[in-house]
Length: 344
Figure 1 (cartoon, helix red, strand yellow):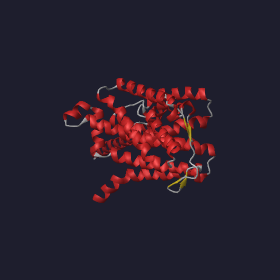
Figure 2 (tube, rainbow, N blue to C red):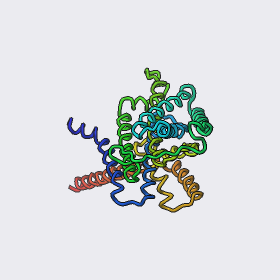
Figure 3 (cartoon, helix red, strand yellow):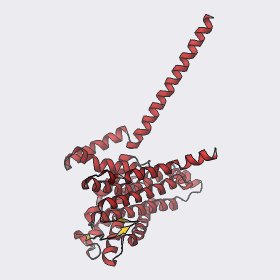
Figure 4 (cartoon, rainbow, N blue to C red):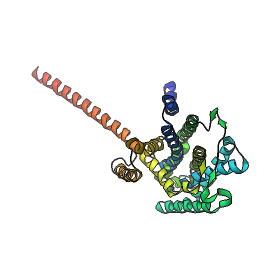
């Protein structure tokens, strides 16, 4: 019994590792350079979206400053690489730390505001940071941005300048982040966050420090966004304020919403749909925007919990059908037995 319980407990972790291994092996099937580049972008936005999905789905806090925190992580890596000559590995803790601190700072308004007022405040914070990035030429390069190169750097044996190897490195980071979020979600602290999401006043009356828990949740989401920002800047090897506008925040929002904010792999599924569907159907940019707008409306009407919720709803539907069929057979068997008893 205990052995079965232990297996069931760690089954989701094994599932995350299995998914990670499967997508890690993508270069082995010989995709084109364009597909591999899109796949890398998808994985990076899945990493960043995972942080927003955790914050929104578990803690119930939506922010439109996620792209700004993502950008701060990217700028940290780029500035450290250009001015201090740091490597990817040396800059990584700084990008994560800057993301965590900025994420915590974004959380401060949530201590006094809530709902759409807080969302508007986070939008304003993102816009202020975008202006700072645009105007602080001596540090950020202004509109001209910062050009960086990975050279011959290797991380965990993967060469950053080789497209296939960099893709596989991003998959490793996505797997680690997913495992971390799975552990947090299934922990006692994850239960506290969901309790705060459902009824913050009730959670506070039970002794939960709402401010402290929100700050931690925002810091974790910010740290993940900072990590994703560094992965992004080393992929494109260029950074400018135009890369982290409100449109990027909306992109993270769409990615999380499409897949399902309550699901661990929701942002990954959403990123896959966001980046690959236009390529699959060959839609021009304007038509692509119209199609995604229509898709979003349909999602809100038919599957407000995201694409992954459709799987759960389908499973429940067939489960009800099987139960109904079994009950019908049992009823027919009883009626047949009663008829036999009456005849005898």
